[in-house]
Image (cartoon, rainbow, N blue to C red):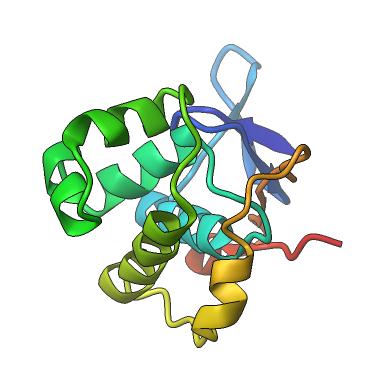
Length: 147
């Protein structure tokens, strides 16, 4: 198990591949970083809990959007997006549903989700389950479904 914090999130990779360097220290290799980030995005949009501010920033960055561009898409002020990402205010559930749908479409996540089901996940909750990635096959990273 490896805690992948390099993305700005606290992601757990199970089955990660470790190597031993010349000094005898154990280190991790991530041969398919784009695939890993796509799996993380899939884990975010499919989780049955509201997106956190850090997760919103991750998705926005993966989408190649500025805060102003994202704000324009969801008909909000850029300051609102900034405050969402910093966790100062909760993300508007309607805007969150639209962001999830946009991420699915533009990151080619191949998800076939019902809009009503997806919208039901956009409600703040006390406990946000961690995103766990199956790293046993680096050519095919996959988020593990929450129990």
